[in-house]
Length: 274
Ligand SMILES: [Zn+2]
Image 1 (cartoon, rainbow, N blue to C red):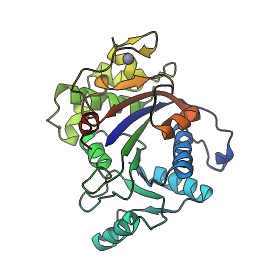
Image 2 (tube, rainbow, N blue to C red; image 1 turned 90 degrees about the horizontal axis):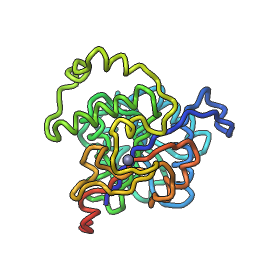
Image 3 (cartoon, rainbow, N blue to C red; image 1 turned 60 degrees about the vertical axis):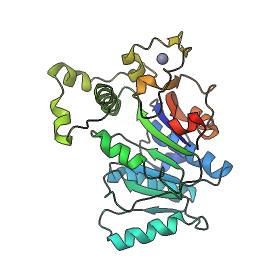
Image 4 (spheres, rainbow, N blue to C red; image 1 turned 120 degrees about the vertical axis):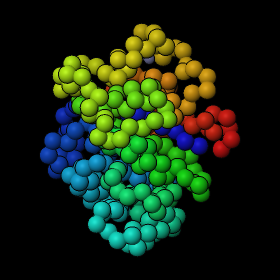
């Protein structure tokens, strides 16, 4: 079973105990909620993925502050050492709660089925990198329901990256351009738009879809039949509030700084196969 979420967060001031970190964005607050609720209500382990070393450093600070046991995969680690820490983490008896890795960390051998929740903290220009990272927990041998959370600060450049990904996916679901081609696809107007910040919306991506399935800020018509989490975002369920969410962890994290969520289930889940 696989459930995917794209979570849009507001910018916000933080008045919690996380003040030890300077300028913590809304996403970090939502992450703190997700981890706390997962830790206190489930026996699940979590994979945290980011493109940036500085963000991984922030994850470490958060884990130390909350006293979560974690392991961080370092790009310079030998293959042998990697295999060892993955094996240790995947063991159900092992108390490590969090596995941190860079979305660019080499592909082979990173089968993290010991965890069944994965947080993508930032999107990559190349959707193939993101898909590879998201597949770490959704592999043969996984017995639990998987939850993939993608966190996006709405109205910022990273939401534009996500829109680019969605657009590419809508154009073609089977062809992935080479990384260097991606940025060349922008026209001058699009580039200008890329650096325009829109802070007045719950989800700029949803606005751009000109969604006809929503009436008065509520999704009334479901996505087309046969769509699943491999479909582009316009064919996902979505919500402006937490009422319709079935994932209790996300529901309990909403008040952190969430403004909008796209969610979809895997094909197998909908068919009741898994
Ligand atoms: Zn809609």
